[in-house]
Amino acid sequence: MAEVQKTTVSGETTQKFIQFIMMQQQQALLALGRYPNPPPGLPPSNLGLARVFIDQLSMIRVKTAGNLNGDEQHLLNSVLTSLEEAYQELIQGEA
View 1 (cartoon, rainbow, N blue to C red):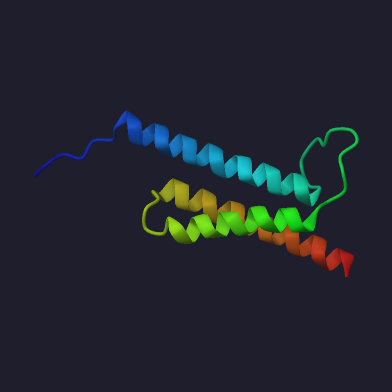
View 2: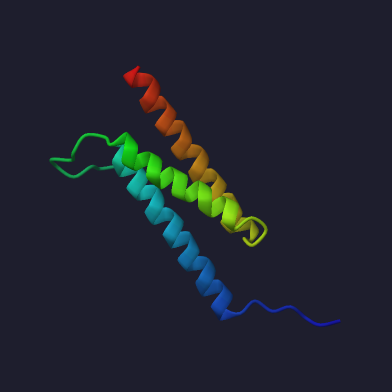
């Protein structure tokens, strides 16, 4: 039986994917006004922009279904869950 080997390319791709998801998460958190250690003069939260980042990550989850490894899928699901919760808390707080 053929042996499956992890290649450097797949490892690099996974790392780049994780970095991309984390960057999207940071942008969404910034738009939600929930970024740790916010810089001085941070603008107020922007729910529309936060929704765009959340929707983009949701689209990525749909488009990559079945193509992610377990770590990538877990990260994407965790990020989306936490962002959706933060978004809903902010929406409910403004109502």
